[in-house]
Image (cartoon, rainbow, N blue to C red; front, side, top):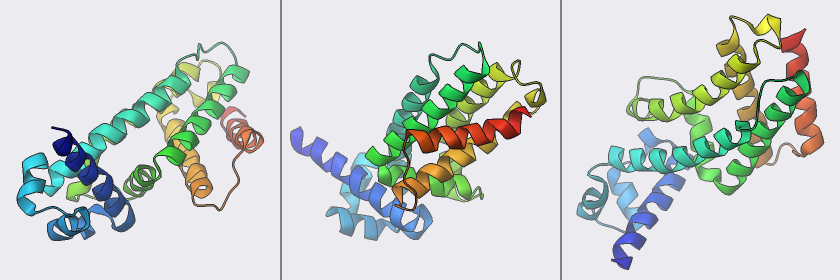
Length: 197
């Protein structure tokens, strides 16, 4: 039983790295099998198809990202602007911590988020993406009472902030930006100043 678990985990890990590096559509089943050191029947035994393997990655890694971001918002009560600013900073910090620990998945997530086409990977990705989007939307809906200019545009501001957070974290994990608490505070403050003014 331990061998089966190890083989399955190896498939998930190596496939995730390959998808993050080349993109889902650019990776063939034979290439997956070669890189993972398994036969096609072995891959099909565990995941039924390349898409099944991709979906398993989205389900496990996406659920972990969802838990991480939900936890960052859990204490928000909507009492004042400073609390909202702190929660936005917590979200960016949590996203950065997740990306540092799950770099391949974050790179894949970022790539898929930026390319919303009607290909097979996007059809599988939409459920994962919608769940993450909802975390940001609920937070901004809860904060709309504090910032009159956001009322009616909560989804727009949520998407803008999510894009800013993802881009910032992508730059940080790529080594182009040093991301510390002060930088995160400045980024969220600059975003809020625009949203609340």
